[in-house]
Image 1 (cartoon, rainbow, N blue to C red):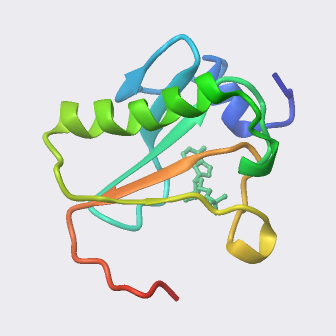
Image 2 (image 1 turned 60 degrees about the vertical axis):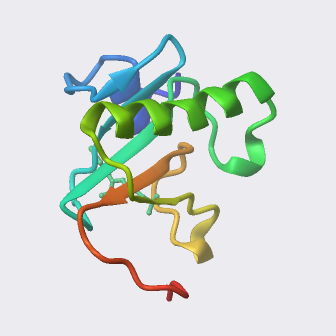
Length: 111
Ligand code: AMP
């Protein structure tokens, strides 16, 4: 838990938030500035700054499982997942998170 980290506060219940899905180690909640009709964030409760700092294989699996469980719960079969790693890649919140976006067409390659 990092007291200056907004996602630590959300994931650990300090800021009341509706979770779409949660386990003992992972939460899934709505992005505050959605880029698609559905825009969720999959966030570990532990303060891990970037994907480069994730060294726990069980937690890696739990994060992927959370994508599958949350989308299944919402009946979403087609979606985009994004992990921005580092400033130049677009990461703004330095607490690891996986974006899940759905409900519109997405172009590829991404800009
Ligand atoms: P990134 O640019 O990959 O670090 O993404 C950070 C995401 O966190 C952005 O999509 C923001 O809209 C989202 N975000 C920032 N603060 C909050 C918050 N308090 N609750 C929910 N989502 C947030």
